Image 1 (cartoon, rainbow, N blue to C red):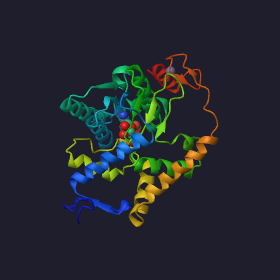
Image 2 (cartoon, rainbow, N blue to C red):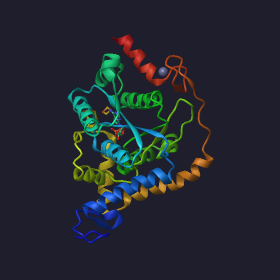
Image 3 (tube, rainbow, N blue to C red):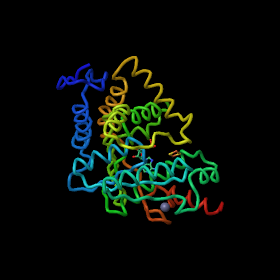
Image 4 (tube, rainbow, N blue to C red):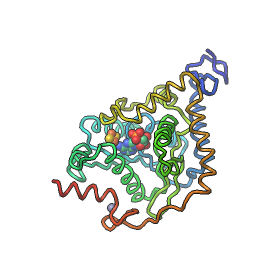
Length: 301
Ligand code: AMP
Ligand code: FES
Ligand code: ZN
């Protein structure tokens, strides 16, 4: 197998693009796809700081690595969810990555802040851990980026994540969620930062291959709460379709994005946001979801 660009020995085949690359041309392809996402979707400019939400997994560490190599001013942002050994190892990967490159970062620890980790919080509230986790991550990513003067927060969601999420939203006809499933979510309140997903053009296996080639040390294990999750089921279904018909994931998600541009023009106005009576962060209700969650936790303790 030869590289389609330079004819050197290829190390990866990309059936969905009907191509194959050597290590150098593959690295260029990965970087180009990210730069293309940033520029064509107007995610952020060179003069803006970017908070990179880093979990310790391959996607977000690859994103942080490439953004810093491209010369963007970044701040790593890690939320230590306190899910036992999994969170300890995730945090260590982030700390080692940042220390090795001299990159600035902040860690927000649920246990240090509230005296309990995600599993105990979810158990106490009788909520599925992943739903409590969504509230915790969304709130803290925005609040911490905002506190540090970062106008943008970038996450490592890739093509597989976005296609699986789209499949879930379509299967349940969650049209409200469809409107929000875009690689760029502008800030609809002065205390909200823009949310961007610069890896949405890259498949999970492409990012994993790049991480291995660049010797990025990331946490391979999935969160213990994700076992048996719907997202993994949707990813598996899409992987089977992709194996039988390369390009399925890409077409599914990119054709949705094309249609979404038309939908966006006809979309209803954003709900009115006020400031949470407890923490001052933007909220649709008098008290935001995060303060409700933390408030109930205090009552339970
Ligand atoms: P996930 O929801 O685990 O698929 O993660 C999607 C993206 O959210 C990751 O690529 C990260 O950018 C971000 N993320 C997930 N977990 C954390 C965390 N504990 N701290 C900071 N960012 C995270
Ligand atoms: Fe949120 Fe696992 S990372 S519950
Ligand atoms: Zn609040």
